[in-house]
Length: 194
Image (cartoon, rainbow, N blue to C red; front, side, top):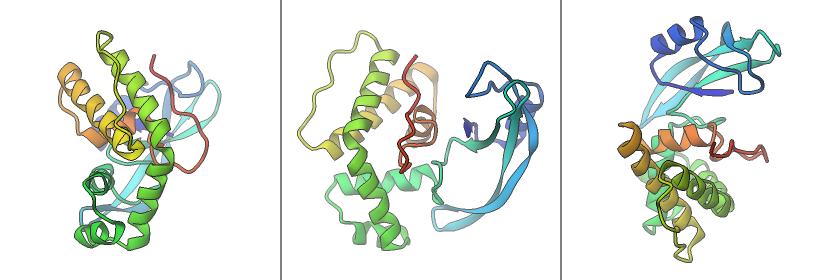
């Protein structure tokens, strides 16, 4: 899996020109068909997407090109998931958040539980990124709530990235910096800041 931009025509042009490097080796990704079509919930609307696949000519591994507005193995966009996380930090419960988003209770509860379970790791990862983006930044202080601290670290890095690199949605930044695995329930490590 490789996180790419959200414009399919631009992604296709870059892929065909050899502009994507392999996440596993120094090789270059080339076109390799498409994945199966899947439903993605964008707000309350279902969007059918067929993600591009690629192959590395060097190591022969294949990768799905996942748009940065998604997290791996999640049906809803990163922004919808992010809005649920923000609502939780503001004191909302999974039922009221699910009702406001028009989503199943179990879906929202799963996101909140996973983010809560990963909160310390998320805080540490995004704090490291904050120091890479702005090396002169002082220490990031924890408030005592791991969930709120993690959410604050994601927001802080998103703001810093916008100031330094230009506009990008906060949760797209989170997807890019975790390789789409922010809420993944495997132990796959996130790429560390360079």
